[in-house]
Every structure is written in C-alpha cells, then in structure tokens.
Length: 488
View 1: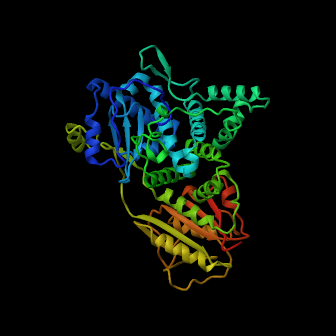
View 2: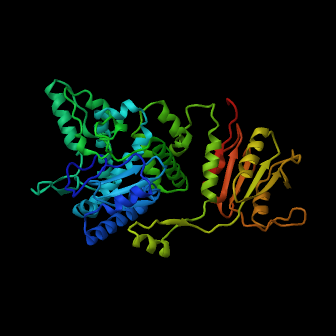
C-alpha cells in the first residue's frame, strides 16, 4: 500500500496493468497463495475496520471504500492498495497474509493511510510536486501523524520482518522523521520547529525538510505506486492511479463528506476542516477547490472573493442533503452467492426508499427581489429529478403561483402565514396544503416577526442583500445564507 509498509513478507507479486478490466480482476483474485482460513480472517478484519470508519474514525475513508466496488484479496500486492484504473473504477487490493499479521488496529491504520493517500493525490495534482521524493515523504509524515491521532495510537503498527527476525514498524514514523530533521538542523546551526508546528500542514513539513542539508527520501519499496511511470519511477509495474479516475472519485468523496458535515455530522466536520487546514499554502487551485465546496461557510468565514455567488453552491448542497433519502447497505444474497462461487468478492449495494420529494419555494414580494434569483431558483428546482415543487409568493398573505405567472405583492410581510400554510393550518383559496414537504425555501429580506416552524431543520432561508439573517441566530438555528448578485 501507499507509503505504509517497508518490507512485509509476501508470497508473490505480479505487475498491475494501467487498466484493470474484468479479466485482470479475476486473475488478481486467483493469484492468492493464502489459505481460505487466512483469506476469511483478512476479510473479517477489513470489514470490521471499514465499519469503524463509518461509525467514528473517518468519514472520508468510509466514503472512499464505498466507491471501491471490488475489494480483492490477492498476494499480487505486498500490503494493500487502491487501484484507480483507466476504466473509471476503483479497486481495493489487499494481501490477506499481511492483514492477518498486523491485526485489526493495524488494518485500520493501513486502510486509513491508503484512503488519505488517494485523497492527497486528488488534492495535489501538480506533476512536479508529486514526483519530488521530499514532498512524498512530507505527505507520508502528515498522513501517519493524523492516523496516529485519529485512531488513538501511540506508535505505528508492526508486521513480521521479511527475514523472520522479529517485527518491524509499518510505515514512516513522523516522530522519527522529525527527530532526524531536528538533529540535521542543529548540526548546521539552525533552529528546528517543535513537532506540532512541524506537522501543521503538508507544506510546512515539505518546507522544513528542504531546510535540511541532506533531506531524507522514502525508499521506492515503501509504496506500491512509486514504481509506476506516472510517478516517474522506472519499473513501470506500480498499481495504477489513473488521474481522471482519481479526480472524479476524490471530488465525489469530498462533496459527500461536505454534505454530511452540513447536515450536522461532527465527525465529518472535524475531518474535513483538518484536511483542509493541512493543505493551507498549497496554492490557488486548492483555495478555489475548497471555496467551491463551501469550506468558508463550514468555517464560519466570509469567502475572499465576492464575484462568485457562493450562495448558489450552498443552496444546491443544502437542498440535496435535505432531499437525500436515508441509505442503507444491502447485501445481495443471491448475486453474492454466485459471485463467491466464481471467486469474486460480492458487491455491497446502496438502496433506499424512493418517492417524489416535495419542495415549497416561498418568495417575499413585499420589497425588491432580484429577478435573476427567482429565475435561477425556478431552473434549479425544475431540473431536480423526482421533485414536486409548490411555488408561493407572500407579503401579508400567501399567494400560490405557477412559474411564468406575474407575481404580485407589495404589502407588509408575515412569515407566520407561510408557516401555517405549509403545515396545513391555513386555508388559501378555500384549500389547505395537505402535502408532507421535505424542504421549504424562503427568499426574503428577513424583516418580519420571527417564527418557529414545527420542523426548523426543513427550512432554508435565503436572505437578500442588506437583509436580516435572524434565522441563523434563532433557537434552534435554521439553514440561512445571504443572497448576493453580481459584484455586491
């Protein structure tokens, strides 16, 4: 696996192709000299580790491995590796002998490291940077430092030495690297950073290692990906990491974790903020990427640029999270039995209840409302699959309308009438609203007596320029964002 193991025993190792097709997967699954009991135990350890990721340790790793639909035990790799192939798929390859040797805590460490390694590959796309062995070591240091902290470990896991002489640590020990760095700088009359400052970001480690008279570099055997031509290696037999596949999967994983963070997952929020913080100083591309994901809102900051209408990205993500049905992992028993008989790992599929989602969009017509906001909302909700939209305009009264009709208004504003109508207590035109809605979007300047809906979590408030963002200060707080247009 990537940068974690420095020589664990392995029975065989075969080259991995640039694209792993179905025939390759069969060959990899067949190439496993480990006995069935070892394979079964390794699979149990892997599944237990992935379950813990989803519950408490790493939302990022949990989502990444959910996208690895094929998880193959094979001695074609010495440890474990995620192969991102040119056909757009991700495959987890793991050596069952190695996993059994290092035990459950070691498996968690290895799989956490491998997931973080792939995400780092997505974040740092500059070829020159990735080919720099000093930067490679820097990312190994920060990844393992985070793994140790998140998994509550005091030291690296250990594996049997290749020569059978005892056990050896698995991977790069960040404290040993820091000790070597500190000794090098002191020997040359320079002042090293304390450990906590040293490991603060990927770029801080990279910059400090470059201050050394003789910066250390990881040996090629350290990483299954280091020998491939895409990393500048000479062997050409490394586990493939197709750039387009890494980009797509990495972006999907971070977007899913961001949605979980916005839905209130403290674990997702902490991990995402930590990951973003460790990329500080990584360049303008990373700043733009985190900005497009809505990191500023998660941090409670104002975006640096005012030309991009961040509220649109925020609303898309927020609305998607409120409309997403609860998903559950389903084990396809019949298909799984067939796949097992053919020597394949069965795929876990996600399945949830499907129904039409109901969205209320209420537009305050008591004051000035930017036409482009109304037009964009109409397009957004209208293009969302499986959504039934109910449009309202309101001032002192509630007025349902159809997009394209002229919206009238101009009187005082009363939010409570909208809440009463949405919750079925107020008749409009002799009829009550009898649908169970999934989300209500209120577009308003915010100036009216405050309200407390029965289910505040379903309400999204878009506050126009110079408006009152009271919903975010409400108890309980409601989803709220300020609408900006143009260069405002």
